[in-house]
Length: 139
Image (tube, rainbow, N blue to C red):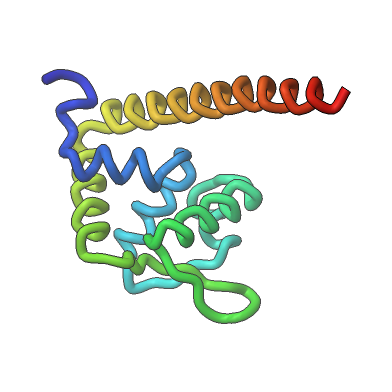
């Protein structure tokens, strides 16, 4: 075993299934560290020095993944509230791994991003043939 295979399986699964960007990773870790606080998009943007649009997208993805919850009206506040104890445990191990071996975590995130791009390209390529086939049957 070498490289990103050295990361615990649940950390690899969490990164593969729920964390698609560096912004999502940083937000998750910040909210987890400060789990008793609630953050606005603006507060997260200022703290992490990341554009508000990227924060908004990352928060939506983390919420959809069951890692955080949104509360309140305007401005909405976000807090770390994993949907399961398994997600919480994996996030805890991710936090430790990222503190101890950040390069491995980033390498795995990059590999996952490349895999997503390849998969999307293959789907687009396959869809081109499906559309082409339909067009020929019409003409």
